[in-house]
Image 1 (cartoon, rainbow, N blue to C red):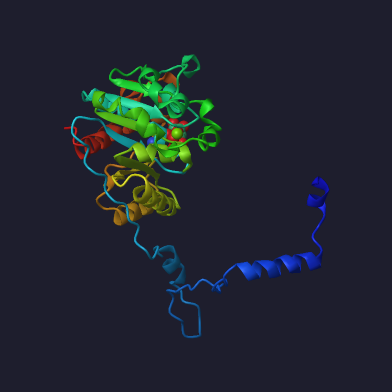
Image 2 (cartoon, rainbow, N blue to C red):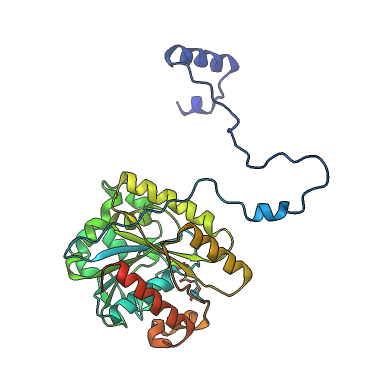
Length: 332
Ligand SMILES: Nc1ncnc2c1ncn2[C@@H]1O[C@H](COP(=O)(O)OP(=O)(O)O)[C@@H](O)[C@H]1O
Ligand SMILES: [Mg+2]
């Protein structure tokens, strides 16, 4: 009877089925079609346009203050699990994961990096040839019991990695069919946690199921923010995701720190940095990570900045940021 599917309903037929529907469904409430927006501007007296109007627009603030709750303390006897996240690409997430992990290992902490991004740049930046790795983050999410055997040593003593790679592409579709799909990462990491001090998860530039898995498994998150325009808008979106995950899946989740990345001493960068600090005075980690070519070079040698050029601006900044995080994480 496939023919009937292609036959358009006659007007009469449509009316009849609408009538039937009306008989069986309750009345739909009228929807106000215009969103009731409250305007901030005060009506001006007619006359010449105000000269300070432009300034006012550029200093406009979102009306609702952004809320980023703090993460809960790490339970005794296990690693702190921290996701490095920002749904924007190219803001320094992977660079931060590689260098913070390395700094922590340098201070004697046992660190596991979990790369949940299909680009797999954590492996490269830590000296691991991902083409020769057979068990990856994809396997861990599909079969959590294989987590223990998915770990690999890296060029940095004290840092282990579970490698992310291209096979993560399309995984979210496959996971949709699985029960408990948001808790796969939590399940996988559980047996590893007593053996590490810190688990750092790198995420893709999206808020999909893999990222949700990372957030559900985490105690805290670190947000690298590039000091460019729209930084606060990006944070508002992320704050919404955190609120949802806290409400539905992981009430412990909170923010351990907001890092300012790729910072250059321009007027715009400084303005954005000041805005972010004003919005989250207790969360912003000082100093900002300066824009520094040595940080971009290091991954091509498969080493973090403290091995490539520890005295560079990037090397010094990551060292200081790691100190702040070390105490926030209760690792000192
Ligand atoms: N502070 C910095 N100064 C200069 N280049 C940087 C800095 N941080 C990161 N980069 C470079 O910028 C690019 C994007 O950084 P990356 O860490 O991969 O961002 P993300 O993981 O958020 O996409 C990379 O090529 C990286 O080497
Ligand atoms: Mg990345």
